[in-house]
Length: 80
Image (cartoon, rainbow, N blue to C red; front, side, top):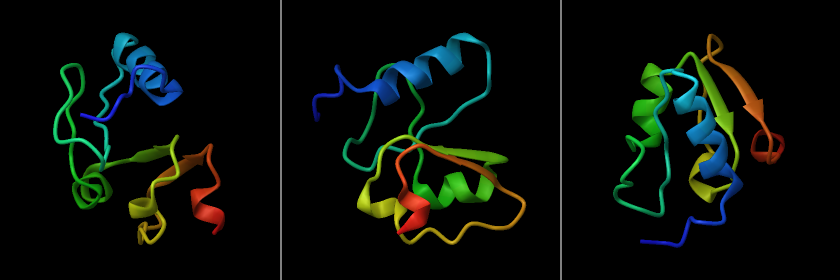
């Protein structure tokens, strides 16, 4: 597993989860995580109301987002 211990994205996801917000996470560089449900980018697009981009993974650069999904882009991935 890639080392995610210093990742601010993990801290943000943990805070959201601890706030009892229903979240799923997409992390294309690992298969599973002990604290978060990981799903594919496609599954996230199919199920999300809001997508928050915290890391500019190349897998996120070509996402075709439906107009009903709200986004928060903290890494400039949607401005490529």
